[in-house]
Image (cartoon, rainbow, N blue to C red; front, side, top):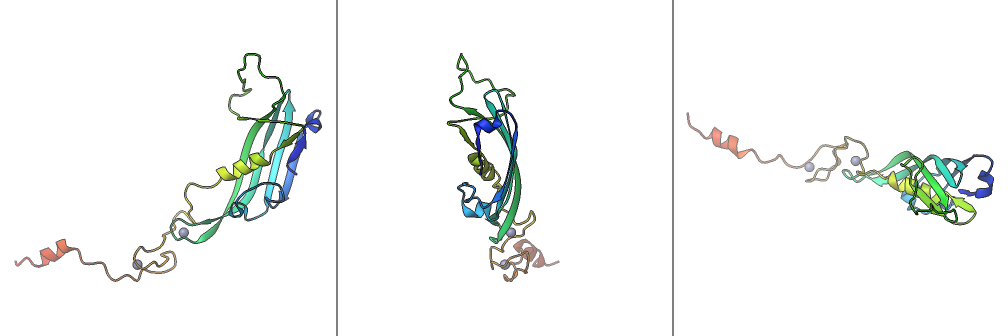
Length: 173
Ligand SMILES: [Zn+2]
Ligand SMILES: [Zn+2]
């Protein structure tokens, strides 16, 4: 599971290693974003009231190419690093959050169980590419005949001749 008891981090660091279908791991995502079982690696350590979690998630997503519309597999291995803080922990006296290294998001949680599942879910959502391309140089579909230009040749009729050249031909020398 992706939950850790706070007590178990008191004296030693922990490594979570999980492999399984997102649903079985308690991660709620659209099935095409995790079309293969996920592999998760997460290192946890506690210092004072901050728990650091860093690691990666590996999986595959099924996307439809923006150009040729074919479905393709997009494997990913995405890294994350986050700090957790129990919301029961004492607030800073002046109410200002002091970030130990200034660059990590701090996620508050309640209770004695820390669940890194939401962090994994966010990491996968951030791995969705901006453009869906089955390959960088996908040639897409012809806008005329609809043929997949990666595999076939366009069967549209010849484009109309350029009228500027036609005009030249008619010039009598
Ligand atoms: Zn494509
Ligand atoms: Zn065509």
